[in-house]
Length: 465
Image 1 (spheres, rainbow, N blue to C red):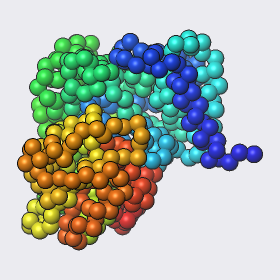
Image 2: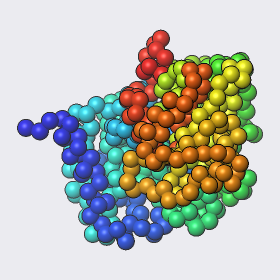
Image 3: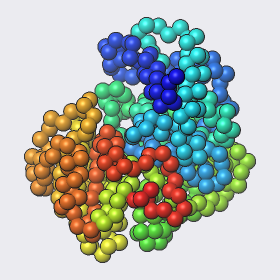
Image 4: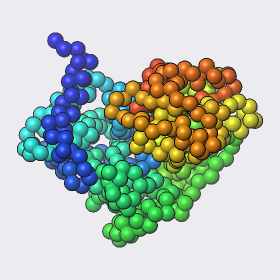
């Protein structure tokens, strides 16, 4: 008899089997040419449309999809909503992708639901040159589990796009759009404008409202006709910076993000880790207000405390003395969040302590943008790689840093790099471990950080959770 762990492994293997059987050349190219998300919709239909039994919200964008999703789910949970949270990719444990009330799906439920979805999928006549997207299969599992668990609202993080994304096939009433910029040009492009068009596919016929974080000017320009058409058919648009505004009250270490929008206010208690996410919080608060309103819950005045929330792998403190913080910044825009956190950290310590920076940036990431944001405040910069063999590190980033005026060194092993940074840091210092998601996973494993709950237990420090 197989163990539950072996059954989980077999379920994960099946999730990727349809994708793996298709020749590589049939999977490469622009999403609009090679992906067939309609199979996810057909699968959900064959399962009895479980997604239509839950109030769903979808999240797209280039930076901050995961944090917007987590923050929205957290606010709803604080407002007594039974909420599901779907994110990807996972950092350590595959089951992180499907959560209920902040906790991952139990292994037994994962296996059971996976078997039911597998049976439904077996009845679909998928051509040999097409496949059931792995993330679509997991989304179908989430939709089924949420429906049977009595979930009232669920937040789904989409993949790199929307228009040709499997998760976008989940029927959703609301859409959250994080900042969009020219990324994944080889899959969504070839231009920045193409990327925006792909992501605006989140405004499906079922969507009734959209909450937008502040957007780069080019993205907002390309979005304009889509938003106009959305409004013309009765959709509500809530944009941070115009319809929704926020302010920060309190000290840098702890305070309140005050949000005011059309028909609601929100008072959100935060600590220094969430201060850089104030813009995200504003969009998430607007989204939560609309969900609560549609569920018939009090929605005009939101008061929530997010000081116990952990954005796993996002400005996550995993140790003190020295402070060690992990973040998945891979370009200048995301590194700006880390910079704002570091500035608040330094201000709170009245200038005491140095900042040690460990960066893991594969060839396809914006190393120059990250260095531009974080280099000026770093006492020491160390480049490293990851344990993921699929990523490539062929650039001479030490020379790039030198050309930008920063001294740096290189240690390929992430464990060795982290060890060297800790050895060089004093108890008053800050060690920032920043880079690709694979490195975030390496760093979390280095410190044996659990990636299950997104909430710290009462009275527990995040660094010891």
